[in-house]
Image (cartoon, rainbow, N blue to C red; front, side, top):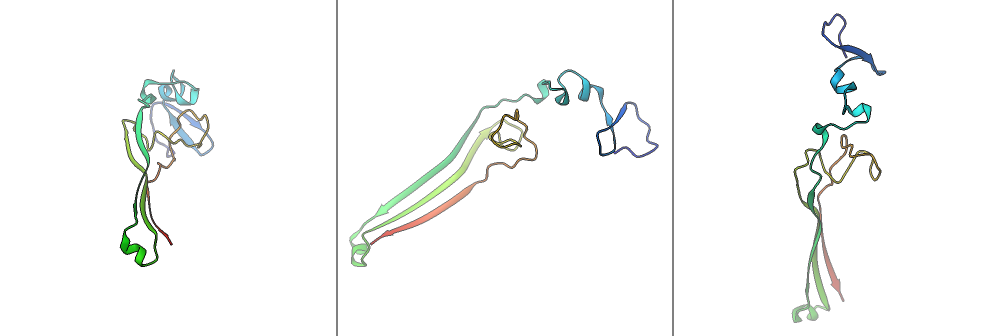
Length: 125
């Protein structure tokens, strides 16, 4: 919002939430986002590498388990989104504000993929 009586050079427009100052180059020039164009400032390297999921498990069936009535013991651990290597400046190059859609890489207000860990113990009698 521009307080009343503020002097500046530029143009004022009201998009519905009060008057705001416009910069001609940003809003109306070639490559302006609101004009449907692209500008080199908004183009980034889209390559990235991610370790999305990794599971390690180990099975045990020693004799001392058989004495307790257990045939097999399996221990496993799973990790999701453990590693991300990218030069991308936003939250996550794999997400956008509209979910799975053709929203042209709009990446504000979105959450990055979360890391998670799951551990399990399986007993077979």
